[in-house]
Length: 293
Image (cartoon, rainbow, N blue to C red; front, side):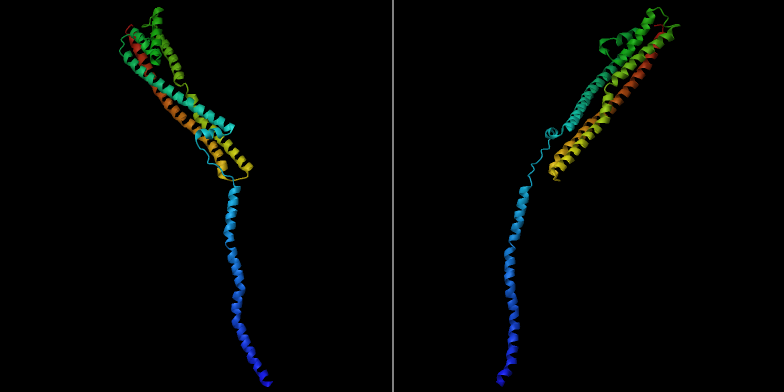
């Protein structure tokens, strides 16, 4: 009995050591099911993410690619923007028609004027000047009309029995000069025809186009609010249509301004040419009257 009681502490120590040595293995065994469960659940996460992506893609409506050609953008615009763009296209068309007409008019005017001046400078009397001025070749030319009215005034004064080379000389020249001034006034109106339209088109077209743009963009923002989406594909066509109105405004305005400046310069140059001719004509008439024509 005494030996049995003495061997108990040794057995207890051996049992404790065995228990400590087996503790890590028990811990690994205890955590193994959790790791297995986690590794089994891990593949399910990407699958869930893919399912969520597919569901999101299915819930988002597919937006077809917008057609960006001019006709489709014009037809897709609102009524107000269509009216603005239509007005700008009409203004641009009229401006180009005026450009063609004025270019042809100035080309013909300068050519006939050059021919008339060559013939006029070969005249030797007031009768010769009148004959050249009223010829069909120079019909409608402003400088020829000036020479015609001036010589006709002198001939009418002569037919009235006035002393055109004597005491009535200055009065006759004054009346001839007044007749030439009347033709010059008509010339200024003729040459400046259409310039007011070009000036108005050049100054107002950008603002008309800007009005269409502001209205179109405002309409696009209203569409954003109603559709409850910020997707750019939904509102981009409307914004593009609105910006096209400003583009058309610039397309109408820029050529109109350029045309106005070109024609204004041409009118100034021809006005200078006509002033020089008037001085030349009055000197020639005065010289002929001094010679007793």
